[in-house]
Length: 323
Image (cartoon, rainbow, N blue to C red; front, side):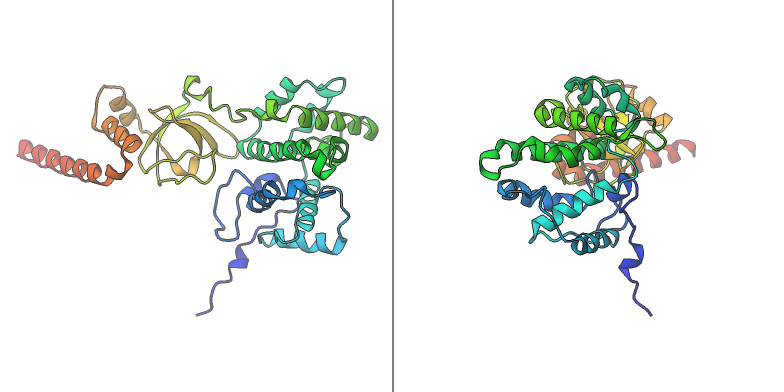
């Protein structure tokens, strides 16, 4: 029998919406990520040593190398980290090719006269979780770069030209003339760089989550081990309260122990009406199980086994009563 070619499941992501880059990886064709799969390895190198390099964001890279790199992304391969200059140029080209900027271009006219850090912060917080997470990680890295200007020689004026169009560009059919668009983009990029720590603080609004209105409650379908600070680490069956869900399916959730994080809705099962009634009726076995899942997860299997036995005893007693 012919072996399946894993490359048959590749998704072309260059020139496609940002969302597609968070739905693929070299090892798994069916994932939901908060960052493009190719970004974290590059960012790790940049944060370890790349921030010290001169001209890393402006160096000229051969067009052939960029073409090959973009083809690698369309085959869902990782970018090599041994030549970080090439990889950075490829990533910038990827973002340049996005059909829409990370922040909605319809908001461009709001910043035509002045860019207020708080307004920019609110706009970023209103975006889907993957956009928020990327801007958080990328923005804080650029802050680190600028904090080390004496070593790398990088200034805001060398970052603004490529950062502005990534953050925001006019929508198709816009009446904004190119010169005005560039001025707005430059101002947005400059404000973003100058106020990165302030703008990106608690970008997912986790601190406010336990005080927000609960949309619905759900249980975790499969256990989740922490893959990043933004994810909620949870065991199977844990009850979570959902306070926000974006168009990409990412939910902001918190637990009975007030732990907060992101989970994708494909790993959540909403409580049924009967379960909601039982949850609201007072102390119950499920509530006890959630305490176990939060505080002593290593005992979950033991407690679930006990719960199964209790259910069997209940069924047996009901059968006896019926007879």
